[in-house]
Length: 104
Image (cartoon, rainbow, N blue to C red; front, side, top):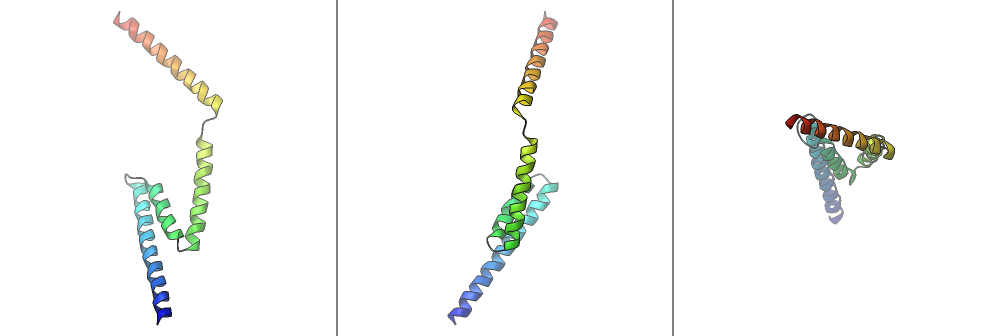
């Protein structure tokens, strides 16, 4: 009887985790096209699913690697950042001079 109870509890836990994680993942997918942090919610849903399902752990790991690669590609190099700051500073200085001469 205890063996049946343990396996039944494990099954109930697995179903509950599947329903909760699946629901959160679907909400994340909906949030991709509506206002909201879609990817963050999807990652949370996959994290919950990964506690019980190996396929979700694999998908979550691939998604993390893909997000990390995208973030590295989007990151500005130091010399590009310095050039961008110099251009913005120069434009601000020019705008300030134009504004000052127009009010005189």
